[in-house]
Amino acid sequence: MLNVYSHLKSDDVNRKRLEAAGIIKAKEAVKNDLILTCPRCNSENGFTSEFCMKCGSPLDESTYRRITSVDDRFIKMEERLEHFSELLTYLEDNKDLGNYIKDFKRFKSKQKDEHEE
Image 1: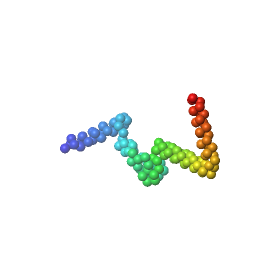
Image 2: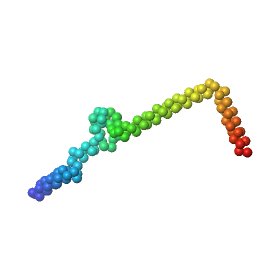
Image 3: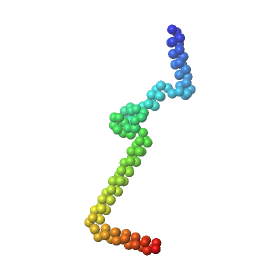
Image 4: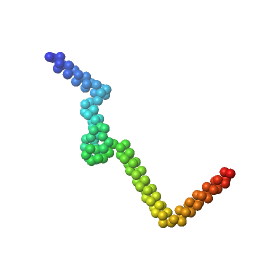
């Protein structure tokens, strides 16, 4: 019976020695590695989470950068779409300009064909 309890005690001593030497992490340190704390609301989240389960904020800087990058690209696409829409409206209002562009393309194509002969 004594062997059961003395065995546990020696394992505890050995674990503490290994922790003190930095060979293994303390139980609390291992627990903290498995929990991500939200920088915004201080909620605890699982270590695989990218966003806080409570407030939805990114939990680390790489996730924040990725989201910001996607937002920036989306804004640029919206701006381009707006410019394209304005251009289409302008071309619809100025049909002569569209005909001029077509004529210019035909002219350039003829020049290219004559140059190749």
